[in-house]
Image 1 (cartoon, rainbow, N blue to C red):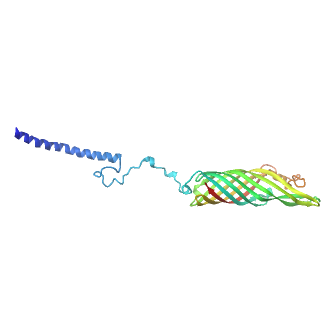
Image 2 (image 1 turned 60 degrees about the vertical axis):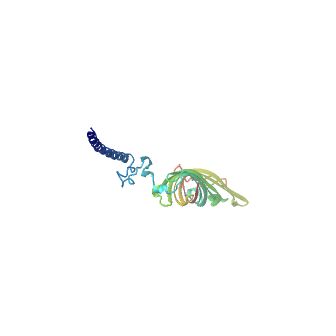
Image 3 (image 1 turned 180 degrees about the vertical axis):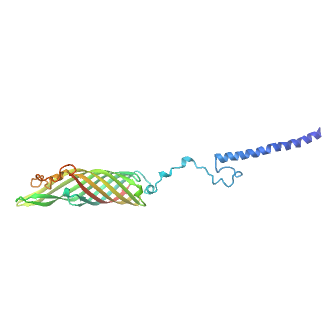
Length: 281
């Protein structure tokens, strides 16, 4: 009995090792495979010692479409929804039918802008030394021209659109359209003397207009930009049908010699070219 027991015990131990050892190895390999699939790059070094650092998992939620990034837009500024305050210095080029001499202009503009997308702007510009051509009828019935001094102002609203394809480096290209109100106020005393009689020039009026504009800005610093703006105004100047007689010598309009008849003839053009200095908030 003792011989048989001593013989069976080693045989049983050897058989148990043969049966269990392969299973243990297979289980370890399966665990490594599972870890590799579930957590790439974190599998055991025994299974993939050289691939752990190269197979890091990237959550899909952290990816963003390439189309959301536009280098010309994103490098223009790192802030959005900005307030822009601008000072305008330039000239107004009046169409001949308005009888106003070309003059310099000074103004302010307040805008809410989303750089790289769109902007809404309010502006007020002033010509403080404008000159209006008027015609006076002298005592002999002749007509002579004079220039009356006055003020012309323009107040309006514009919608600007940023064009990233035409904006490179520190340059930004804007274009847009809008509408505005023109206000004229000319009042000069003693513009004409007829003996002891002093004739005054007195005329006030207003017109509406539409306009389109283009603007090229250069970013000196994130909060300070300079730019050049050209605006083309189309003014509904129905008063041009009255000729050049503006409450002068009691004559309000040329008799039977109206130059413009109809809405299209009443449209007068005004060009505006300005240098813009802007601060962003």
